[in-house]
Amino acid sequence: MSVAVDIQVASDSADLPDEQVIERWIVAALDAAKPQARDIEVSVRIVDPDEMRLLNRDYRDKDKPTNVLSFPAGDIEGLPADAPAALGDIVVCAAVVADEAREQGKSAADHWAHMLVHGTLHLLGYDHISDADARAMEGLEVSILSAQGVADPYSLR
Image 1 (cartoon, rainbow, N blue to C red):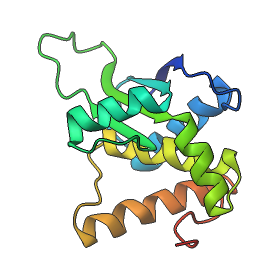
Image 2 (image 1 turned 120 degrees about the vertical axis):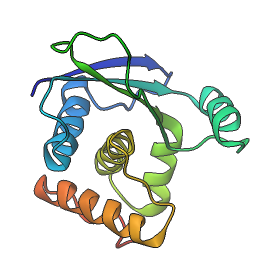
Image 3 (image 1 turned 180 degrees about the vertical axis):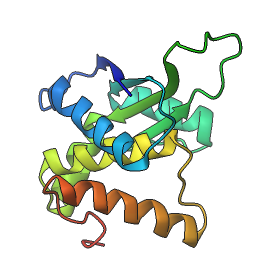
């Protein structure tokens, strides 16, 4: 399986992870979750609070910026069998991630890693609506992050 990550930066933030780091976290999540064997495409858009607030309002009825949103692509009819699967889009608000990292006493790099892993797992169908689903998703996140030397992000709650 190969993974193509398209990264769009629509943020004025100067403190962003580089593209190789973003791709590494997405690939780590995909490797751990073991999706279908075909090639995969993922888009990541890094935004400022105004754009994230609009997306969160329009798609989740919450009129405030959030850290990460995921938009699964779903099946695309008519795609050739050998074409990469479009997994979907991950949108990350740089300012919210930076603020949360500071408030939670985490490094910005570790919090970015968590948000990218979290967003990727959502694209794969993981969710945290029920307690059981949350335990499964959070356990996988902790495992992925731990394998790369990042502390359990949920231990600070």
